[in-house]
Image (cartoon, rainbow, N blue to C red; front, side, top):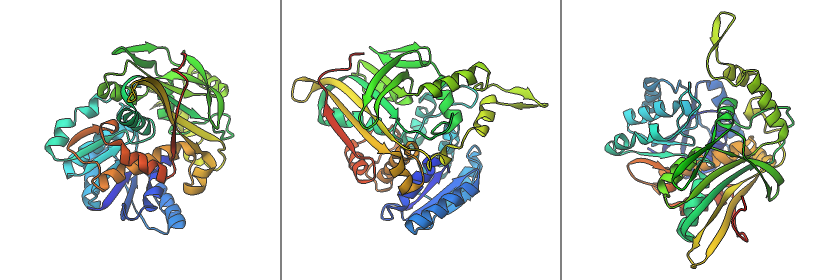
Length: 402
């Protein structure tokens, strides 16, 4: 039961498997599966070249519960790490229940035919995993993932009470393309074009997509425009930290990206409903994904840094009001040199490896479905520093003025 099975061979899966291979004491046996086994084989070749380790590869249709369960029975892992598409979360969870194996993912479920994501579908599995004596860990990426662990760590060590929490996600990298997305184009565009939502005084406040903009000066990147968005960790943090009066998520976008996105929306290329073309149904957004650059190919040309973190205000353990900023800076070129992937994949794949390490070593235990902020943040935070995502904390003069 020391094996781990990773499903998904995109950039995040590649980073996670490379980092697992660099930690043989924790991951002595690694299996990688995807719909396209050729992509798994390419990653396996890179892992062999970079680390000297051999991983096994398999083909699987993760939408098919029986097929996925058959693969799990064949591999016999202790843990399945789901780095496939969010559409496949529930089928992989079903396969884990069917085979008696722990589960971990990085992003919550959303249906294929509706651009809407929330945790209700996965939280509904609580009793099934508990009754089976199994653990499901949700959202072990960066955001969601590290940003939630940051909040838990701040609450544990620095705050008696958190009043406001802002998550700031800045990608200051330049890949040299006219228009490309840094992770799966279909998921990225659905996320960006959805209405913005944030939590204030226990209520969800909805605003039009990309309608609220602020400028922020990010260390190692510089001033960037960031936009209020909805992200799934807001829902879980609002649930598990009901004391927080305001929760917001911000992401940076360049003007050229937004102009291209506006044009694509205006001509209907971001639609997710089927249209007829040459006598067959196609989904415009899926066609767009097919013609855009594959995110995993952008690493070789991407330069610059990411800066992602939390700004929290509240009552400190020293009895005074304070504002703390906790964040990580990741370099695209350094990430590529280590794993062959750019920093957006790296910042998600490394936390996936760390979350898996927590389960594999029985540091995180329990039965049922857990969001990552419900678990002890300290060992996770230690591994971030040890495995390529060092973090720092600084006190700000006061709360954000917006």
